[in-house]
Length: 424
Image (cartoon, rainbow, N blue to C red):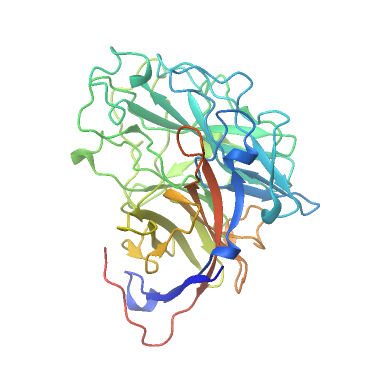
């Protein structure tokens, strides 16, 4: 099959002129080169196993790759799937990953009727390892009161009755199994949370808690910190209901209490258990500041060592009358994780090639030959960068199974005098 399109798009950061390295994203979209790293109809371990997040991955000492991109093991009625759980993928590289159905690496819980009872529906969103054996993980936990409890969700609205938290997990066997990092001081294993617990009568149509964001860990080699770009932190609890992104960092991921959030001027925000006894009466010192707006679709962040920039990707899908759906990619950039550019279009929209349809989200830039064991870095002059997306594939049964795909992408400096894209 032929090339669908090659689009070179220049862009400049919304920062002082001296700190505005130019970017040009070149998208080479060749249907024949699309890499399908997960096909639900072929690869799933059980009838609940699919992909519902951007990939987290690391290399072992022998060069092989362990990757995670799954879905929670809870059915729509709140009941865990028998034998279900969150499964990993393994392979000699990112290009030949195979689902390992031997045993789940992580399991959620059925406690939908009690927001304080963890875990609920879970996703292993981020991993980090220094040696390939001891692996620290961040788990996105979602409580959905609308599933089973009318008293806890009087509006019956999924958007209002949704509460998320980021839990800490750890593997000592190279990512084969993870345990939640609970302790007497932190019985729920909370790494990052809203200081405000779930509110049954919340109005406004906003998710509650630490809402879904780019839950990927990214290391800044200049200061040695691990950074985490999350959702706005409070969802409906923010004044005016603003949505955006907040940022946290740590130098010791083994210490769950070491995370600190940015308050707008300093790294002083701490995370607390909103369900600890006695209950908190205020959120002072536990609310991070918004550092950016939101991109379409939950985005992830990588660091480009050549440009010395953090890049967050977003994507949206538009329907084309009489044609294939089109994918529009978006991005934001930052030099320090606390100040971000406006959302901008990364390239002209391109057609989603068959057989993929109906979805193009969880965009994630990843360097298959990354100099980092944890794939959080794009190499200085790498020629192996891919844009990963989650999409749908046709099926003879009900619904549309999902697929994880990767498209070759080039990131290079813009030419002198290149025009700037308008802010979106």
